[in-house]
Length: 144
Image (cartoon, rainbow, N blue to C red; front, side, top):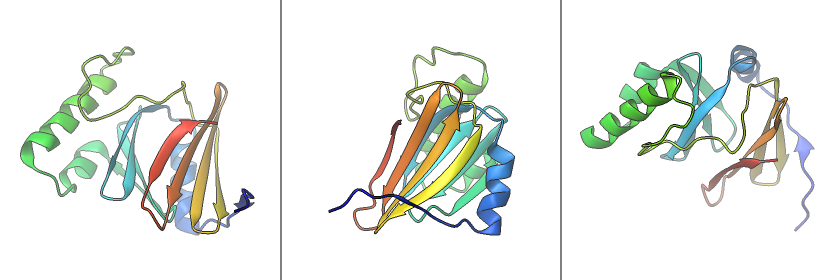
């Protein structure tokens, strides 16, 4: 299997979402039901699906739309409140993870390799890679 990533054209909707997230900082993220949910410091959740489609919603709306049980929803809400309260250590998170690097978004690029997708989120401190598989439904987030 080759590891050749080719740039993937984005839709006008993806371009619109990306334009809104540029300048925001990634505070935390979680994976649920074949999607990655990224909490931004602007109070919005950027959702990225396996096929690299995406949405951007205010965090209360995004959390309320999750088909998840009440206790899990409350844990997610508590984690979001903790991260939005400027608690940089974010100790005590139960559902969200903090990114592997400080990531104020400068640019977002989408790539494909067969049934794999990679979003590269560029920041001054390095790149955050989000890789998804349309076959296995795996989602990985790592410093790139």
